Length: 389
Image (cartoon, rainbow, N blue to C red):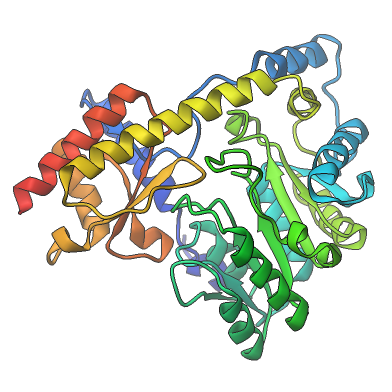
């Protein structure tokens, strides 16, 4: 680029391994290869008819211009009503910001509170974007010590200068759900340390246990001024491409995040907001529950097939749509990124290396795929591993 100089922060960021593997799989498929993808981070169901019709109606009626940067007033109110009731929060639309997906919501919230050099605690393994989002702002991501965040991680991070944390339950990539005791302990530690938290709840409705997912705000409602909740329509209602996410927090935090958004994307797509309004108001609950049951059955199928092999170690996920498999006993000298590239090129199976999530030696398999693809995909994985034995 000649004399063009790039920003060091931008050059320090890593691309999304999830998107890279998915793109490579699509490239091979376009070239005529029989490729099975168990890498997707999105449901494979059609979006609910109620959302499609609501968006189409908005377009037919000419409601295609800008909205307020913070979102349609009626959508903000519907979000405040639904999640306010869920978490015991005030149903005040001033606590809600509608953004271009939950990722955008997290980015806006972080930009409002992270200063140069701020340390931010993130889970290990982490979703690929958490550390990069913090680094982009000049912050320092600090990972928890074990395989999930604990109260001791919070206290230790606070002693070392951390100002906040990102929490994700159910987890991407593991599907782990923090139980009520673990969540309460984390909430207590937050109260002690005065740290803020962003609770990434995008998989909250994809829960295979009893009752709702335990939440920081359920355990300690007095944290409401310091805990931001992030969710959206992508995973719950199979609306990933609609790019609608919601941030809910103290009105001052939301106002600052909204001011940031007003200078970047302005509003989220107008017709997509109308489609999202339909599902938030409850017009697609039958679709939601049907998808949840299908994912539960797919989870059981994938875990059964992997368990039959005997070579794999993995926890049964209680949420999301991923199985995080420990391949360390079979990898030998191969790292997981090389393993996944070889698996894709030789067997036509796309999975995501654990190194992308800060967990070398693991791979993430998605059961957001048909039963046939799950069966064929696990068979290819088993065959590839057996060749290396």
